[in-house]
Image 1 (cartoon, helix red, strand yellow):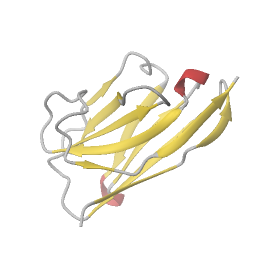
Image 2: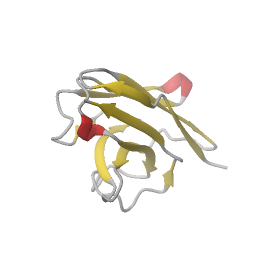
Image 3: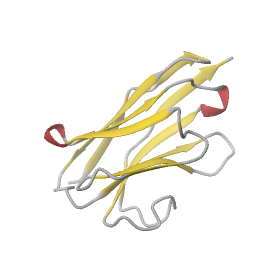
Image 4: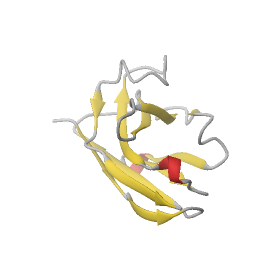
Length: 124
């Protein structure tokens, strides 16, 4: 059974940092793309960042570019999202997701697996 389990969320003040983790299990993800999305109350789920398991290629939303870094640890089957200089508008539930191919990577559609989410709250 495929599982994506996020962790690392929490409450921080503006300007602070958090590192989110996504532990993947249940299949081989070597050919997959891994994405981070977020959803704030009353808003649609939006793309944050993605990374290719095989090539390490990355892609970021403009809203987090320069403040966030996505990375992976193949040995641990874990993807990370390091977020710095956090802003109140970063407050959301953050989800990890996996899709078979690196295409239309920023669309919420087409991802095969999703985690349960982890809450990030940034206070001003």
